[in-house]
Length: 106
Length: 106
DNA sequence: TATATACGCAACCTTTCGGTTTCCAAAATT
DNA sequence: AATTTTGGAAACCGAAAGGTTGCGTATATA
Image 1 (cartoon, protein in one colour):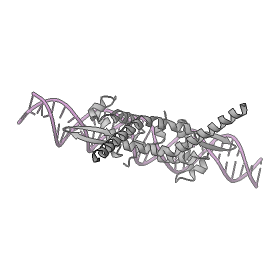
Image 2 (cartoon, rainbow over the protein chains, first blue to last red):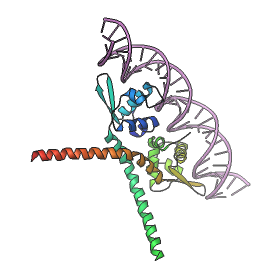
Image 3 (cartoon, rainbow over the protein chains, first blue to last red):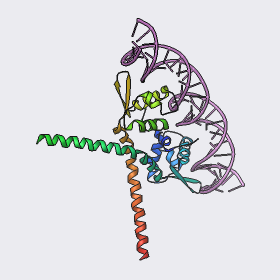
Image 4 (cartoon, chains in turn red, orange, purple, yellow):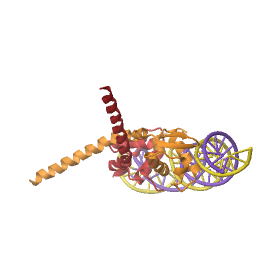
């Protein structure tokens, strides 16, 4: 099984679910209404998202509300960090190029 | 076929390749030496990464150097943006809670 | 208590994924 | 010119993904 967060967000439906419940918790049935699939298919996606702890459940009677674990999303951000350093460096380099051009114009 | 960047980074080997060539361009053979698979398997990953424009080629004689298209990585960052807003809000809320506690102590 | 609703689980099916092996073409070396 | 090196393409394979249908169970409602 062995889920990881990158595999979880690879599926477009799962990404949409994440966005959907980001602001407020929702039940599987309510979520499924937003997509062109069965409730069971959505349920499967929710299971995968739960397995990698991207979402959590909150039972309320016979309903289960799924809520985004926003902190887990930061792990993606964390991975991006190493590249952010690179693209900022490139930006600085571009900045220097522009500065040089400006200098030459004088 | 229809590749997208999220599917591309879902595979751990592809993520490792991305990190590997982030700082300097490399040939398929050189990349493959870092992994426990065949060159052909790496070649397939490179094809997928190329298809979604995460990397680009630079021919040099009979060698092909693959280089990261750092700008494309920003698309992931862009998607995260909507959540960043949420987790910053939560942080502010937590901040308020802490401030309230501090106040009560006085 | 009988019925309706919410939901997960299991079985099944088709498509995709990631890997291997085999082969071919182009460039470099001898 | 013959050989070696680099690397992509195709055929094939087992495993996993994503979907569906059918079923069982717990809670709510009549």
